Amino acid sequence: MKESAVHDMKNSIGMLLSTVEQLDQSEVSEDRDSKSKLALLHAEASRINNDLVHLLGIYRMDQDHLCLNYQECFVFDILQDQVVNNGIIFRSESLKVEIECDDKLSWFFDEQLIADVIGNVLINAAKYAKSSIIIKAEVIESFLKISVLDDGNGYPEKMLSNPDELKNGIDFATGSTKLGLFFASRIALEHQKDEQSGYIHLENYDGGGMFSLCLP
Image (cartoon, rainbow, N blue to C red):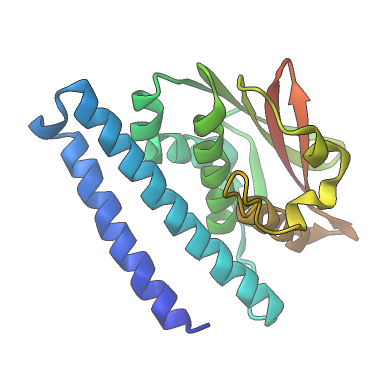
């Protein structure tokens, strides 16, 4: 993998996303159909961008080139930034997004990597949610737990009963590569403190799906 080629592609997609966001604020998007198409374009471009980030991150981890930049971060600010960044998608789907987090809560982790994980989870949640998404963050037993809950149909039973399912490659029935979940799992594991490692957890909650990222 040539990292320079990945960065070139990311720059091009970044320009595309910026253009879509500008169009969303212009007269072009005044009618509902145009807004829907712009939201779809933004969502798909974001997915491609996230996949490139994930592939590059996994490559660096496999080559032992990934260095985590630990710093104290205010969790609410990061969650809010990701909600704003994906606002086009939420507005198009008429989704209500709530954040339940103490605005003074802070934790030490790699801000950019964790923001990438949360952003990708939100995009996926928007795809399956019916009307709302809730983002929760709290400290439980020395771990920071960030959860994203949607009111969709929940995760498939095979993913809940077999956590290794996300490593099984492409699902040709759905087109899913599970790359986002695999990346999230690897990034969580890279976060370590006092012989404890981070992890992700999937479950169905009140009929919808809940993704949790837990960091020591």
